[in-house]
Length: 313
Ligand code: NAP
Image (tube, rainbow, N blue to C red; front, side, top):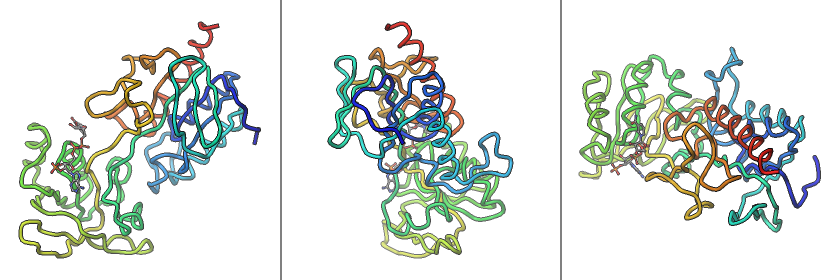
């Protein structure tokens, strides 16, 4: 691996499909970019198992394996990597300054691809069974639960959307919500309430996930928050839909975000309000949130950077 320098033409923060596709394109445009990949490289795909909806892999591919390939491909054309977290960024003047550990790195252009993180309950058993019955992505993993009974946790638009979507595969979807009414928009509520395959478990939370990685999830231990009763609900899968959090802490007060915290980019481009700073992938997309759309916007960011640096010189 190349030695890390003090100054790069292009620095990319984040190493999911968006960041690594941006790196691939920036590398092939001869910018020898630096990717600061965080301490858990690869992004959200590393918490899923088989990826069957990324074009070009007819047999499917494991999420972590796919991200290794993305990384290798970007490296082949001259991308360097730092496996560490960015502690702060100074976007007041160009070149921008990025602090990573003890290093201070300058960048003529910055691509933000820090992604979003699915909110989870934080239980040990949840971590253990992630990818083995516990999932945070219905479009990624719904297919594995064909003909099975599953549950969705949450009461917002995501939970309703996922519950509806999952009825394409599952025989029954139990929507577990901690209150007695949904937070979701009326139209989503109506859709899910009129779906005969969806049942509601109101006023319940999940206390534990029962199963083992080798055999998969067997049940969720639920608690009725009104009566205190705890019991096991037998399901083969559970989808956590208690919200996503865009990873924008580094840019708070510096870049504009929408009311849910996602970075705002100019429509049809990856430009943020600061010239030379671009954003791609889930950190600026709360609608599609797919590996392939993230990769597409990573490509856009690298092309936007190339144009910007061409014009700035
Ligand atoms: P959200 O609206 O924040 O809903 C999160 C849900 O999870 C809430 O019902 C909340 O319960 C529950 N929850 C949160 N923390 C929990 C915990 N620790 N334990 C148990 N339950 C918990 O998140 P979202 O559904 O992902 O939506 C995010 C944004 O994207 C929203 O603005 C939404 O409108 C938008 N979105 C839109 C669409 C669409 O229009 N098609 C689809 C998806 C998302 P409480 O209700 O009790 O707080």
